[in-house]
Length: 133
Image (cartoon, rainbow, N blue to C red; front, top):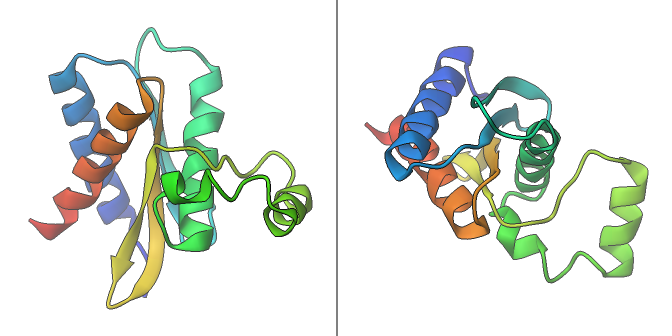
């Protein structure tokens, strides 16, 4: 099983609509189960830095199969530090991404950056919720 391009676009559009409804400017990235980018948008007026951060949050969530917020407390552990060193610049263990799960398998993740951490996660959850409709 994998996340299709159509599903990735549907998630991106739902997350973008949620961000606009909330009145925040963000970058949104959707990655596959390995953390490779499928689609991304950086909304008008948001810093260029948010694009890489949103992808890094999604990468973390996809690789561990949990919301990226769950990884924040473990970020300083030796194992996590070793993993991050093995994938330099790819992973951002900070709140704002959630995995896409189907039948208990990780298909990918969606990550958001640019608003408050809780808002980023809320926007990401709206993206995943679009797949359940």
